Amino acid sequence: MNVEKSKKSEELIEYNPLDGTPFTVASMMDTDSDIVRHYVLFGKYRLTEGFETAEEAKADAESMTWNRIMEVMSVVLETFMKPLEGLLPNVSEVELNKNKDE
Figure (cartoon, rainbow, N blue to C red):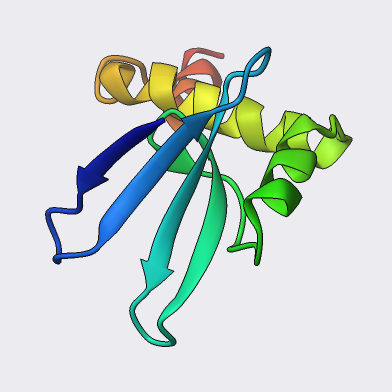
């Protein structure tokens, strides 16, 4: 268990890595309602809305659905494509240049 202070406020955030998965359950106080919410994280990315219990969040993280696969793939693509921004032409530029050469 890893507990640290949030930089945005004085609230505590508790991180619980889930064994056998790439996910972490983060538990933190909802500042609007003073209720503790539990979120599934993949790295620094939050994948879910807040659950009422850590057990619900853990069960959700451990269920491998197509939705979960697509969420993780979106994060992976965003992570790997971000450093390449500006280095690769976008599809419309490639198509315009292709049509120009014909």
